[in-house]
Amino acid sequence: MLPTISHPKVFKRKKIPCVFTDYYFQSRYNPYLSEAQKQFCQSILDFKDGKHDGIRFLVAGIERLKPQPGTIVMFMPCSTQRKYWRRFKTMVDYVHDEYPELVCGISYVRYTGDRESLHLQKDRGNATLEKNYFFKEDLAGKEVLVVDDILTTGNSLQDFRKEVEADGGKVVGAIFAAETFKMPNAFWCYLEALGWSEDDAGKYESKPEDTVVDYPYQRRKWGVYDEEPEDIDWMPDRTIIHGNSMINLWYGKRKGKNVVVKKEILPLDPESDEPCSDNLSEFDLRI
Image (cartoon, rainbow, N blue to C red; front, top):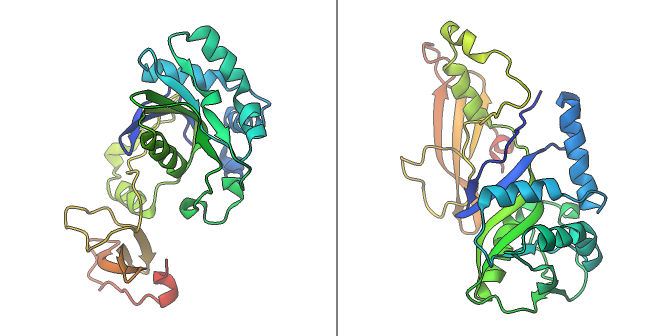
């Protein structure tokens, strides 16, 4: 079974305190999910379609982030105004009734038209969304708490933060219903394997379903170095297992293109005398 969490934990994304309720798993993970995880993922889809109110994750997020009185609760703009109101309409009344010290900012957003949904775009991690809204209220000197459905790349949050800051406001937190689950990369799997011993056998007994599982990998933006990485920046952009070797690659920008700027070759078996091989084809090294 893939990991789940029982209580939202605060973390920072580009210095913005964020919180999400649980992981959203893409359909390819369905064979490995518990029934509870499947139900949660369906509730996220229902929330996006306006069939679920999302009050649970809103309340959990507010209780964890503890916004100051006067903070404006703003909702992430959708591709159309109709989706925007359908998705967040129940939260509006709840904020008014249960958190009178906060300001509900759903009406602060004025739509100028429709745009294509992010999930329909290819290479969504690098997609640039056309702005289809503006703020009709002055945000100068005001703190903003953002509410959204799913955290995947974080690009939408950063774009919204820039718009808020351009209007004089400050994003002090973000609440998400879920974060898209990402598998740990091969590098961390290799480190875990190296650290395994018979003495560790008793440490990995099955845990209750509500146990918090923290995977030891860093959240970071890949492949955006402007120069060769320093030695201290040891986290590779890509790890390839090839023959008896583990090859770590770092990418950087050269004349506008992503190229390999550093390569490290390590033996899979440190005690082996067999030489490492790095005769990878151009296809293997292509980003």
